[in-house]
Amino acid sequence: MRQCLVLDLKDDPQLIAEYEAHHQRIWPEITEHLRGHGVTQMQIYRLGTRLFMVMETDGTRFDAQAFAGAERDNPVVQRWEALMDRFQAPTPWTEPGRKWTPAALIFDLAAQ
Image (tube, rainbow, N blue to C red; front, side, top):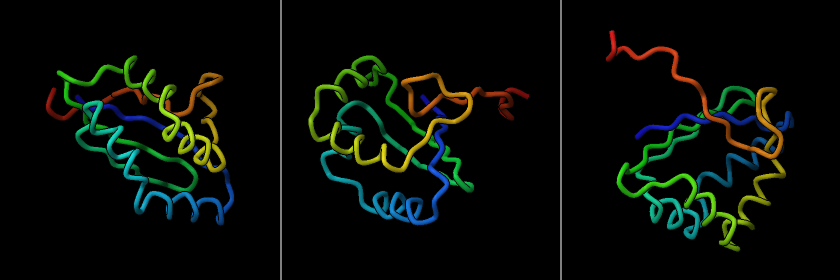
């Protein structure tokens, strides 16, 4: 199952460079957390301050609620998220209290 999510970065070239540096080699515990919950692929793209994440999940193992709960209960994931908060900003369309926001699929060539 593919999920596409959007988030903004704070408009500061130094912070953007630091954010990208952190993502050259994320913490192994974060990789383990993602794979352990059925995330099979993940890419993050950037245009200016806008980030676009493409996440592929194993439909039999990935459970969004369990994933979110595990994030809240894992102190290493909490530290990573707190570190990332320094760089991230909600999009103008993001609900309060959310970070990554799902993008709506508006076109699929396969369906044509």
